[in-house]
Length: 123
Image (tube, rainbow, N blue to C red; front, side, top):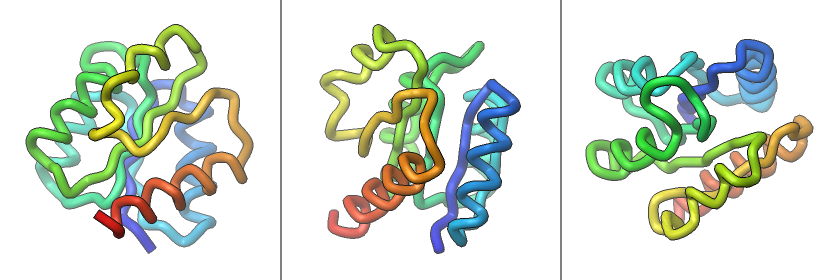
């Protein structure tokens, strides 16, 4: 079981991820934007952050950079429904453990989370 923070502004996607990851046995906290994720990170330690790239305010890229600086033990997995936005993550391979393309299926989500956590454990 891992402690996972999900930052996703789309409520239906956020709820899907929350249910799927809890069903997979993880302890999950879900928030709706980057600022709420920063507040959650200040209160608890997480093994993994799953963040949407496109969010109002602090987006997923900015959040990933902040996590890499302030919470380096937390792995980061990004998600986006916009292929052009995924290109913004190029060059951040040292900070992120993958990128999910929306829409994704439950198995794609859990496989990506498992892979991100496996990389984190091997660091």
